[in-house]
View 1 (cartoon, rainbow, N blue to C red):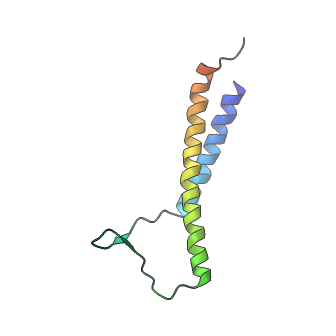
View 2 (tube, rainbow, N blue to C red):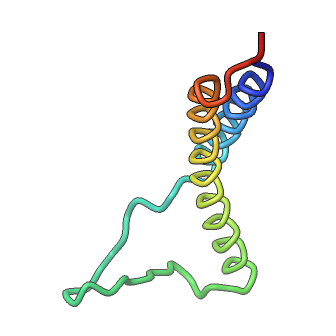
View 3 (cartoon, helix red, strand yellow):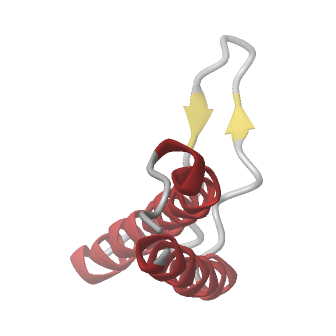
Length: 90
């Protein structure tokens, strides 16, 4: 079935793109919290508008990588199950 082949290919390509995005923009792994459980932001210098924009951009890209990985997994799973749901005509 051609649709399953294209969905599998699209899932593989999205998975590779997601892997590169997550390698270049990793999710934050270290968080500092207070005794109350609130997060602490620590800056080494006074944040400028440019650095705040860059931080927001990196956070969006890291979340985009995770979403792309999820979509890639879903496409490959649907491509695997699709021939059982919609058998090809002979």
